Amino acid sequence: MTVSISWLLRQQHLALTQRGGSGGAVREIRFVQPTELQDPSPWLSGGELVLTTGLDFPRAVAGLAAYVERLDRADVAALAFGTGLSHATIPDELVRAADLHGLPLLEVPLRTPFAAVTRAVMARLAEQDYEHVLRAATVQTRMTRSALRGGSSAVVRELALATSSAVALVGERTAVVHPPDRREVFDEARAAIERSGAAAAGASITVGTPDRTLTLQPVGTGTGARDYLAVSSTGSLSNIDRILLGHAVSLLTMELEKSTRLRSRQSRLNATALALLLHDGVSAESLATVLEDAADADGNVRVLVLHTGSVDAVEDHIDSVLARTGRNLFARSDIEMLTVLLGGGEDLESVEEILAGLPEAVRMSLRAGLSEVHPIVDAGNALDQARLAADLATPQSPVCAFRALGEDTVLASHSAREVLLTIAATIVPVLAQHDGAHSGTLVTTLRTYLEMNGQWEAAASRLGIHRHTLRARVARIEEVLACDLGQARVRAEILLALLAWERSDQ
Image (cartoon, rainbow, N blue to C red; front, side):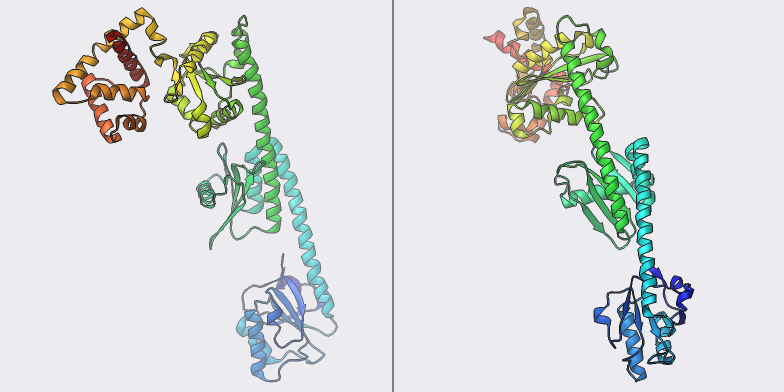
């Protein structure tokens, strides 16, 4: 808070008059400092209204000019000279020096005590403090009411208007900015978070440039806050602005935590509905209104079964991944098994993506099975398929799709084996003939590539070749067989066909 020279001159009871320095830059008073020192600059910090009677002023003209120059370098707001004591009038040289440096020079008449000037300035500063506090209280009330009506977007808007800044809520699931055309704040905030490495610690961040200041405060509870409230302002935020920022952070934290609590309750309801759906004798039609969000547009679902010693951690991770795309969690947990109901559009690759962020130790011990696509009323059969697939998952292929099950299941069926042998007859001889003509190893390459579930690094390592060499061989296999091994379905069918062919030779 500051007091302007013009306001001080308008206080008629002080009877102050400006005698010099009127052509200088506008200066604001932050404090009042009476002093009779010839050089008070070491004890000044800038913004002071210096009061003096010139009791110990130098007699030489040069000394008066140097005195004003020292005050100007100390960045004082103004010099107030009391007349009628040691000087009947303000020395002319002091006026000329004040005009030269643009330092406001005020005359304080004898009848006006310095204490009255000090009291007027300090009272005005206190009044401004109160006005700012009152404004902050008013804005806080308005911000709270806006939060109840409009949620996070309303809080961001009110803070932006109150601080005359661009404000953005930046997070994994949130992207709100005001004014709407200031979307560059998102990129600036994310870059600042990445540079500081503060995302995990949830620390405050301030980045200053000559033109703007970017202030970020973590939103959320605990040290793992992933949302930040960013304020891009001209210059640093005032104390009142920081109070408003803190209030906005509190409101946004409650808003986000409210969403988390509601999601948790919804997940518990979904878990109950899923348990009822998979229980014999309970009609799926009676659960349709609860479970319809789990199915795709055609009403189809898949069941994912996961065997893990970290059920809670895996469930929390899947919930977090689904939440980022606005999907609800439908899961039922047992001691070491987690059953998840997914939309029919999910496939093996999308399940791998969901599980990708799990800690390595958890992934190493996890075995999962994914069913085929079923109507939601047939979820019980989907569960049986997923359990069977999970039982056949291996460390090399920890997530197994029912359609890609191995010889111990599919090959046990005579009819299925005959179909697979027919497919293999169009694959193995063709590749073997190519290998014989070109001294190649396409049959071995194909078998290894399929066993490694299409994982380039793992397959290349097993074969003892570079992954680029493997890519070239697989491309040649695709050309010879006229197929696309990039499709999981194609890889599964060919692998089963090769297994059936090998068993027929035994």
